[in-house]
Image (cartoon, rainbow, N blue to C red; front, top):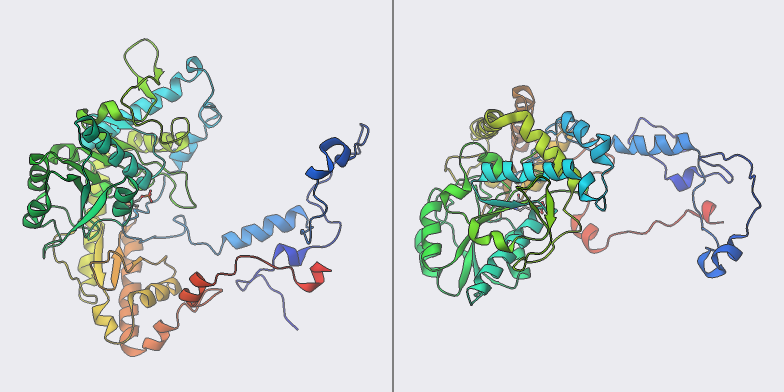
Length: 495
Ligand SMILES: *Cc1c(COP(=O)(O)O)cnc(C)c1O
């Protein structure tokens, strides 16, 4: 007989806990005449039956989902070393501020006279991000990084169209984030790949050759996905500008620059910032996120509508913007996320933001130094806030980056980013962020070293990991090609 227990990571489905007649609520007896739903709503609008719908009590539902939630890894449980994602801890004060009644319950249809405080938060956040990025104007409308990219490239297209020719191509280094070429294609541009040099940066000769009057601009992730700062970005921008193109910077890695260097000062015309990465707003679960776009003056007239007009006694939404690319998001964007980001910025202040950057870079370089004796580091350029190893050494013993990541789960950590960026063979991409303590990072480093040793003495142990989870290694190809997405009630419930 199967022994039921909560201690193992096992949980019956709600359907299996179901017992006819159980309810999660009790209502008082009806004190108005009963209505036949078919008569009131029309028979077509009433479901005939709800087959096998689980009937359970409140405590069963609460415990079921609470138990399931403990199987999840979360930033509140430990380090989340995913590279390119800046999975930092979100201070609770951000949440507190975002839950203030006047902000949490603000409605987008509320009149301007009752929205002045909320509008001031948007204006303050735009100004702070403009200052941090060294740009002239910011729109907070886009809902995510990739959405910001699309907005930014559409701004470039609008400006070039106004000048008479939107042009055909966007140049993208091979170290760029995968969303960059996708964005350029969706905005109607052809993508031309720019090969990186041996140091992992833009190759200026390759760029100069590719740059022509057909090219709308360069789209560059900086620091790039190798965790390396583009040292020749000023010269690269000059090459692009000389032929009338614009420079788009993917600023998702802004956590390596805030308070130290400003893209507006090194030749960037338009960029996005990920609030859910750099500015400590919740990340994951499908959003909501924030991907503000910062621009130089020449692009300002094309920003999405509405803009908030400053100056007068009251702030006002300005919808009449003849050159605007239009709206990219309902209303004004994800307001709750903006509140959290501004709370984070104000709580830190200039000095604090700069310290966060310095600590993020220090933590990444600490991990680099500690793990360099055990894992191959193909690009030896100075690292910023993340470090990318390759599995070359372990692959000789038959163990790949994906296997190491799965074994890391047994040590209680979320895996790092696996097999990305593509220009590193078998990549292990690690970004600790500034929010991790030396102790937590040391535990992570020791775990990685321990796995490296296991691979030498007992590779099978690593290849068959994870061992501590409910489900061990799955066949990822079958899971992707033939997913089982529909639950069928067991026979007992079906009856
Ligand atoms: C995360 C990320 C993006 C995309 O941001 P989303 O908010 O996930 O759409 C783009 N570029 C880089 C470098 C990133 O790390």
